[in-house]
Image 1 (cartoon, rainbow, N blue to C red):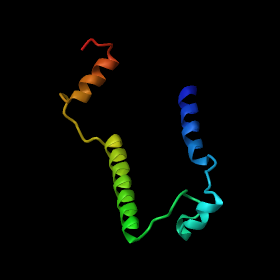
Image 2 (tube, rainbow, N blue to C red):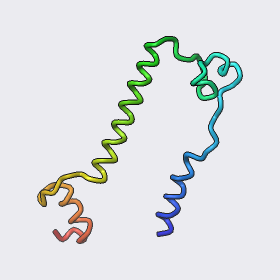
Image 3 (cartoon, helix red, strand yellow):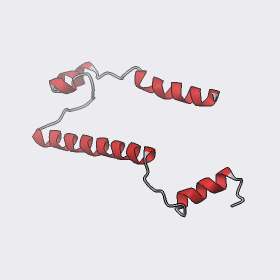
Length: 95
């Protein structure tokens, strides 16, 4: 129980870490929405923003679906391979 509590507290603390800020040279090259967030040259045109938005949509969709199927997998068949694995791990491999 203590290990699980420690893991949860560690995972909750990850978003609270100190962000790395952009240097002054990079800050001046970035557009207003990205200032103080990234280093290097900013997006060079509308195409870059379309690529960024597309990537964000794909990542968010993957996150939503992975959480959804982790919480509610929907497989109820007793012969499904996940049940074989769970049955073996709970009864010590006896079947």
